[in-house]
Length: 113
Image 1: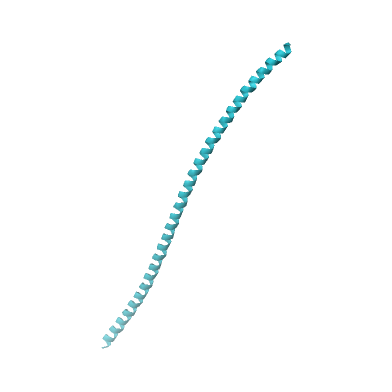
Image 2: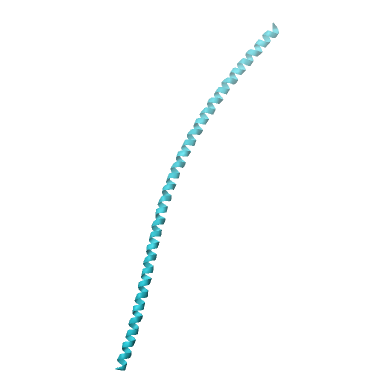
């Protein structure tokens, strides 16, 4: 009878230990679940930020392409205008040369007369 009592006490002790282990494991599982949820939320946030950054990068690339095309167009226009001005200057030089030639001829005539 004493032996049965000791066995019962030992079994009760083991049962209490198992209950404590179950309680501890449940707490650990809750903690792990919370960590998983936190990490999942963090990953989703990071993915969202990555998506936003890719969109901003795409927009910036479009703006860069537009600005590059605009600058290229403006440069082409400036070159055309410069060439036009250079043509006008060349014509004026020609006219100045003709006037100089005419002036020289007239000066000779005046000097001779």
